[in-house]
Image (cartoon, rainbow, N blue to C red):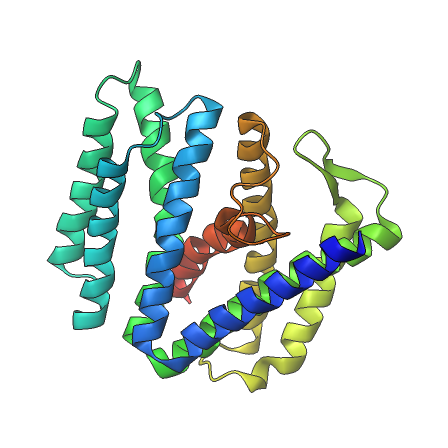
Length: 270
């Protein structure tokens, strides 16, 4: 038990160090990091879909073609600091590759589920790259702020759930999650966000920061539940084994994947 806990701590520290270093050092290191994460997330999502019966057995050729398409989008961000027609064409080809790969799919619903889940696996990381490409010096702090909210929510939910948890949130999906833990994590996260708002170089007002933190915590829980549901359907404990003691990339980034599209939508309005 002690050795497992020690292993989890070490791999967790390495993961956080790599993420923060890559995001903070330069736009080049950040985009390379998100591309690597995207590659791993896409692979793990394909494996989960296959095990749930919603996907085909992994094949290297369509996977490499999909990586080339996402790689073009990340290069577009580096070269033009935004998505251009290059990204549009590459993402269109990405969907075409999926359609051709699943040309023998039994129903249109089956095909659409595959497209949605595979696009879901890459969308948030592309959005993170977009933020950094548009204004690296400001938005690297913003990305770290989002990650801190997610990590805070996850850790505080565990602590509050252990101390006060009585009512299960979704026992058939994630037996460990309780309403008390999630509400406690939400309240405590909003409190520290309010307290440190001036510490981040952001143009958001206090009220918008609190509203954004609220959305981050809520959707981080939903993202965690969605991935837990997929793993239950696939009859696996972890999405992968890239991180000893923690599982795969999807296990660590499930909340981030659900949060980033919501953050992008929020910022379009506020």
